[in-house]
Image: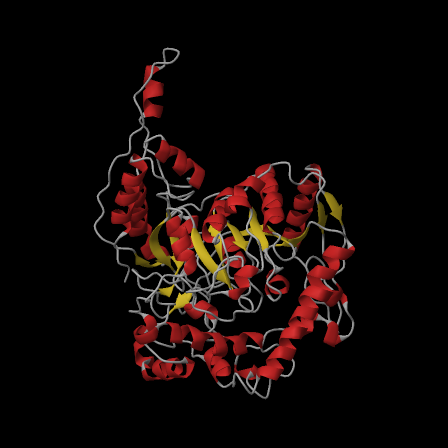
Amino acid sequence: MHRVGMVRVVPIMLGCALAVGGNTLGAQAKATAPFSVVEASIPQMQAALAARRVTSRQLVEQYLVRIATYDQRLHATITVSPRALQEADALDRERAQGQLRGPLHGIPVALKDNIHTADIRTTGGALAFADLVPPYDATLTKNLRDAGAIIIAKAQLTELANWVASGMPGNYNAVNGQGLNPWDARPDPREGLNDGRAVMGTGGSSSGAGTNVSFWAGNVGTETSGSILSPSHANMLVGIKPTVGRISRYGVIPITADQDTPGPMTRTVADAAIMLGAMEGASPDANDAATKVCTPPANRDYTAFLKSDALKGARIGIPRAFFYDTITSGGSSTPRGGLTSAQRTVMTEVIAVLTAQGATIVDPVVIPSISANNADDNLLDWNPCSGLEQARGRDASCSMVLKYGMKRDFNIWIASLGSKAPVTSLTALRQWNIAHQRAGSIKYGQAQLDISDELDVRLDRERYDADRRKDLRLTAAQGIDAVMKSAQLDALLFPGVSSANIAARPGYPSITVPYALLPVTAPASQPFPAGFDPKPAPFGVTFTGGACAEPKLIALAYAFEQATKKRQAPAGFP
């Protein structure tokens, strides 16, 4: 159950009414309107705080009321911080004394519940960790608090970032049940799918629902392959999946250090840029060697790149094969990929917007590993191993990087908990889950944990190294790096979040931006029952680049956002 205390609602009044042009009543109504957190941006909140139109305590109280009112419909929150109001009071006192910690001073944000907070439980959604209060904060948690953020809650996630069971629905975990999407917050009614799962996908393993309906200003997700971009896309949010190492992973429950990264999920590009800078360390983290990869911008200020004319002269590549159009390549004799008619219409509009804003559109560009005829050189024939059908001995045609990384890095994380660790290893977790099946520990099994735990980190190292080399060859050297260099691009433009896989394996950055709502059509094999009409689903676009390209991608995404301004809030959560 959510830990939400009693909340006192305090009216938040603006300044005194002024008579302007004889319209005293109109001016008074406007002047006394309460400041609302609904769809409020971080700069708007900071301006209201600076003008003393609102306090951080009042922001927290409004958010707590919204959580208490709406979260029973969404399951977007696992734990609410019992110290949020106390922290807000302290930050209000600092502000009154002229002391501001940073760009998030007094702003409430949420963390995905696989990110350590030493004062709030961190469950990962797993029953074995339901009472775990870690012995240390994640580095990014400390950085956010140093910037003045209030950690108001721990957000819903797919259990252990979706590396438990191959058949587990997105945004389900044993601690908090099934998370739903505010755009269609109903369970799936179709036979075989009517186990409580969402009728509209929530995307990835992070939750964007709470940010979507203003439970907090923004939230931190984590991604191994798509779990920042996808839930942002599914909730009409902006999501930045940073270069691996841009944000420290110390204190984040892992899948694999090769691909894991935290990143911000917000309602605007500006908010995402502010959060990204606050999450990043001023210097490399001694606990995460990857933080040496990228150099932070001056003062870790990504807002310096928020330029509405940034598309002018930018070279944007359109990777048509597979991502826009079907293609027959590699080991397949039938076409793969492509867009629906509605998606194609949207992307035509998007490209027209970019052109009107002065971008040079390079269309098409060819990604060698997508178009390669030899299966060994084709990324579409080289997917991550998943499920019991690709267990040890049956996994020659898939990449073992994720399942190997889970065995290696999960055990390192468990050891870091010391005496607070509820279990001592991945093997012990699997055994605990089996012993607690009647309590709901593994409703959908634990095939992903099984195929990881059967590996031997030492004996399987040579195979892992070979698979990692192939991952990088197909996604970087013969993938994103090749096309960016050959076409001299600033970014690649992908429909939806279709770049997640090719960008995730080399650890490259992407940013997704909302654009449209499109009709949902069920496949003929699983039609919706008569009388059930699915609601339209969000659809956006993603800008992807090479390592450490966040400044450029933020600039392009911001210019596109300002030219379109398509973000809207879902109905039913006023």
